[in-house]
Image (cartoon, rainbow, N blue to C red; front, side, top):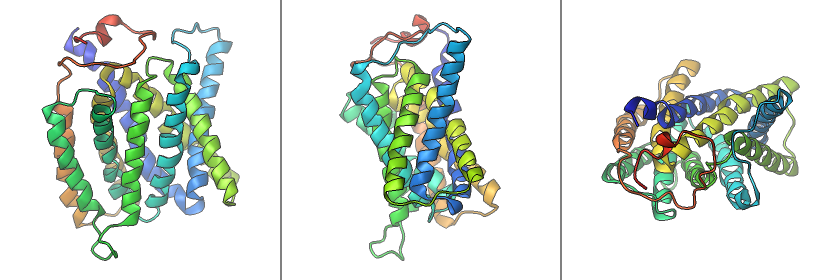
Length: 319
């Protein structure tokens, strides 16, 4: 397998996912002033699921042959777990914290998703974690502590920032659960996750009597969901099947930095001192983690190889 063909697949998919998801945080900040966080989370995922469902239906109408493996009953536990952790809990916690935390700071805090994904992949799913990753995790964690520290708070911790850190943790769970079914159709996975998470959050929003916003706001939220969540999940699943959960998240680490840059441009305000102290730490941690080579012997676990791909791309390493 050539270096060029390897780069063209897993890392490229992960970076495409990072670009789309990175934009979601500052754009969401724009809409949060006119929509309840739980209801907003439901529209983001409903937009993701509905948009991708239309893509699937359009493909069938045109007679496009199915090249990907279908989801089945064995995938249900992983799907439900991913929907609950990454589709309901994580986005609600992010959007709730985003109301009180600058978008650039929130984007950087989402780097905790990398730490959570790598640790869960290693400790729970026995995915290999090399020296680079072991070095990067405390660096990223230290940067997160800098951003979360609030001397004015009663316990020295910003609850809003802590909520965003927890959102990253639950997305880390979601990443590892989705890894178990990454061999199946990525568009189908993202569609099911989007519709399931959207309906779950919508039920919660209605239960707590969230106010329904104007139709234009709903349409904007659905569009943001399709572009930044739906397509991002599709690219992310493609990368998972090539690189594994830990390495995909290493490349996905670009998302927080993209979000931070877009936030500064959109809101025309420079973040505070703690942001600039944490930024080089996050950059260093992400760089160290991304440098780890995918050239060691490891186990993929219960990963079903029944998707459509070029064997020399996925099996270019010893397993």
